[in-house]
Structures are given as C-alpha cells and as structure tokens.
Length: 450
Ligand code: SAH
Image (cartoon, rainbow, N blue to C red; front, side, top):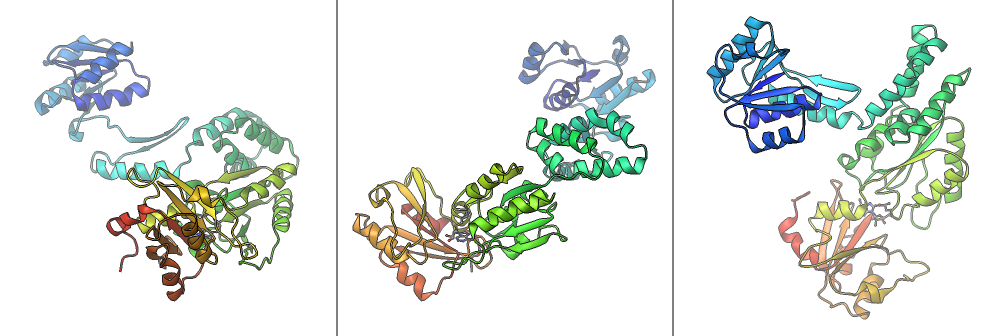
C-alpha cells in the first residue's frame, strides 16, 4: 500500500497498518525522524523522497490502498482522484467525503477484533467508546478464543445440534474455563475444556474466587472483581463489605454472611474454610468477598490453604486495602520525599488488654505507621509510641469509614487524638495513621468536604 505524506499524521496511519502486517511505500518531500527510524528498522516500510503530482499513483505496481496524509488538502484530493480512476481504495485523512475506505478504531484481542466507526462523523466519540470497550473486554480474551478455535472441530462432531453446541460454548465462555484462560493458565483451561467435552452429562467445575472488595466505595473494585462477582452462584461475605459493593453481586446468587464483630465470632474460620471447599466441590462458583485486600489482615492465605489441600481450584483478586483507600480519600500520602521513606501496616488490636509489637522499630524517623483494627487500643498505641520516644506533637489521624460517604477524618497529635475521637464517638471500621505526612492533609484533602 501507498502512503502520501511524511509527518505526524502519516506516522500514525503507518503505525496502524504496519501492525496489521502491510507492505508500505511512503512518499513525501520530507519524513519525520520516527518514520526514518521505522524504515531503517523494518523491511516492510520503504520511504521515497518525492513530491506528489497528478498521475503519480499509476507508477506503483500492486497498490491496493492509498492513504493521503499530507497537510495539503488539495494534494490529498488529487491523490484521491487518481485512486478512483485506477480503482484503488483510498483514505484521505480528515476528509471522509473523498475516502472510499475509513479506518475504524480497533480493540485488538486477536483473533477477536472489535472495530468501531462513526463513518467519520464523530472520531472523538469513537475514541471514548473504544476506551469503554477496552475496559470491558478481558485482556486475555484472545487466548480464550484461540483455545476455542483448537476445539471447534471436536465440539462440532460431538454435538450435532446447533443449540447443544451453543449451550456448550456458553458454559465454557462464562465460567471457570474462561477464567483460567484469562489467568494465563492455558494448560489448565485446556484440560478442563477436554474434560467437559468428554463428560457425558453436564460437567461443571466449581471454583473459588477470593476477592478483595476494597474499603467501601464500589468504584474502587477492579474489573476482574466485578466480572467474577457477576458470575457467582454463592457469595460468602464479611461485615466490612459495604451494601453498595454487595449489590453488585449477581442477583440470583445465594448470599451468606460470615462476618465477625470484635469478640463475637458467629462463624468460625475453620467453618468458613470448610464451607468454601464443600460449595466448590458441588460445582458452584463461589465468591469469597473480603473487605480491602484479601492478603492484608484478611486471613486470605488460610482460606486458600484449605482449598489447595482439597484440590479445589481458586483465584485471588487483589483489592484496595484500607490503608491506601483511606489515605487517598483523606488526602494523606503514605510516603513523601520530605517526610517518610517507608510505611508500616500494623495490626493494632488488643489481646487481653495488650498490644504486642516491636515499639522500638516503630518510633524510628521518616516512616509512616498505619494501624488497622486500632480503635479499641488507640490510647495504648499512642501511649506506647510516646513512651518509646516519639515526640508528643507527632501528627496522628484517624479515618472512620474511609472512602464511603460517611467518611470522617480526625486530625490531631499523639497526645490529643484519642480524646478527640472518643468525644466524636467514632465507630469501626477506623484506621489510624501516624507520621508527619499528615501535615500535608490540609492542602490535599479533596473528598467528602463540607
Ligand atoms: N483486608 C482488609 C483489612 C481487614 S482488618 C484490608 O485490606 O483493608 C479490618 C480493619 O481494616 C479494620 O479494623 C480497619 O482498621 C480497617 N478498615 C477496613 N475498611 C476500612 C474503612 N473503610 N475505613 C477505615 N478502616 C477500614
């Protein structure tokens, strides 16, 4: 194919068609540096220094498509007229009336391609749509499609009726086999698909998804969390899961509350671990939804250990942990060049009236401390830090129900924060942050402002 033009616009088009594997000849008086570099790195792009004149196009053999991408509208139109008289397809940049071909925006999950076009009317709108599709379509979709391609003939010969084949593929594309392909476990996806094909009656594999539900704001869920929540047959959720997040679970899913309130354990951890195994072994897609991130003070490790011991397949989806959610929504950067080069995440709960920690390490300079589960022990935490040498005016903050519309932020120092928080009657969940990064909050607060 031929491209007339050698500047930025030509470059963009050339990149696009080069990705599709085209053999390109570009013609221009001058070429930008990138095009020169591209041409010397690839034998599929040839640059010809010449100015375009009427009839020029006829001198190229085997041209099937020409792109007119100069900054001179008249030249572009001459190229278009030449193309028409030679029956060659043409695309004139920003001039759809003179084009016989337009380039759609592409979401590329080869072998699956989604093309979006407005026929030249609204390219910006098309770009916005493309961004939405990019977010919606799993990155690993191409791998799943390629896997399906390898099984197509076998599936066709097993299921003679079209509707049986359709039902088979729908189960494959919407469930554990697809999820294994998205997780880049292609070998396992292939084994599961082969098993499903070999089974005589409905074969369904159960799987457990251990999902971080984030600190509260449903907008902080990951795409993957949402996708798996919408496939769930059963959901086991914690007290920390906000109603807004729970609302996003598939409507027909069975919801089981396994929450714990401090000191009161309605469902024991062993019991939860066991339930996950049982439900999955019965062929269910089980979502274990936890607040924040499952691997940060979430006992996520224990739950999947039991799954692994019982041969149940599982995936772990990270979530925004309370520390990063609360810090961001309160306007407190956890690290900062001038204040803190490290950050500690600490479990601050009282055990029989005591908190057992390495306090000497926690009072070092230039670090930020984040206490989870610290509301009951707040007085002890502040007193210990003072005793081991932190200055009384060290800034301290408590964030109540961070990232939700009930978020409250209390700012004080190691001596006055506890009283401030008690008099405002703050309720769990709360997070305590200690360190001079808190001084930045005055400038950086942005959420839930009065
Ligand atoms: N896995 C979770 C933490 C579970 S421990 C995570 O990664 O966030 C529970 C503690 O998390 C609570 O005691 C509280 O300290 C903190 N927490 C969770 N959500 C919170 C929120 N929205 N606001 C403040 N603290 C929160």
